[in-house]
Image 1 (cartoon, one colour):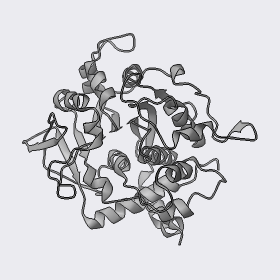
Image 2 (cartoon, one colour):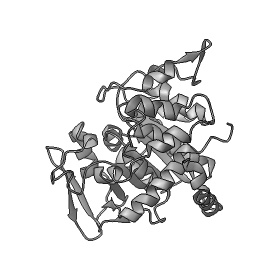
Image 3 (cartoon, helix red, strand yellow):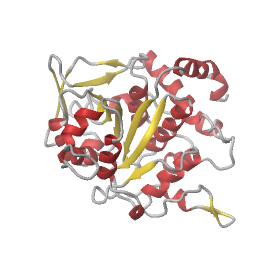
Image 4 (cartoon, helix red, strand yellow):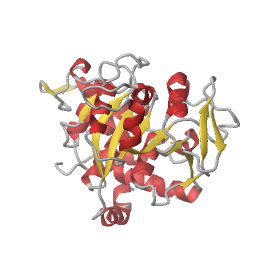
Length: 338
């Protein structure tokens, strides 16, 4: 049974609710190399922009692989937005990938997935792009979605005034950002482990510590822990059935290269996107306010604090079903030009 026909009513609800609302201005900071949920999350943002529910201002990348920029540009081009700015991290964690090589595939001598960013060296540095993008937006208008290492956010906070902005990083964030939606950490035991070391923290502890310690107190942070994504896995049935509107689909092919056809992949990064764009739709509950700290072993400790900056997502079984349905709709919707 196909998923898309089952969800037409939900699709109409998305469209009707989205009309008239100002699109959420989004910067997407991703480690698009290892896991494939970054690819699904980026596709989801394009669908949300198609529905006038967000505006994707820029994509910055927090891991090092020579194909990250070209692949991201290929996804953006596939969805009809080849000119979205992409910023590259030059010296973070180096990571191999099972799917980035898709960007090099050719059919009849032409790229299967067209793109004009051919080399990461031709893309701006990530923090420079973050500063330029933020400076150009209205005050308190930008939502940053961070779904990987915190290296770009840490360096943004530590950045000094430059030609893009007379403000330092802390001042720029405080003036321009209204929310940070971050996939990192764990706030419930994972398989009985009450001190689980989640990868986005574990792979660059010092950067996540800078983020947790120095992010401005008056700019809210909402954390989607490891436990949320595993409770709302992306269904393999959708990958099999919902992307056949073109002979080659970059999202479907990336998913299959990463996870194969018989795996429901956790939706870690997608949940941070869903909350960032629809914070009031009751897809999730929120913890009480508090403060997240990052230990030297990478554990994320949440301490309740009145008027605290941080909250983390919580989700019931019923909400998990709603979240999965929404994610399938948003990932698998065809681009308007196809």
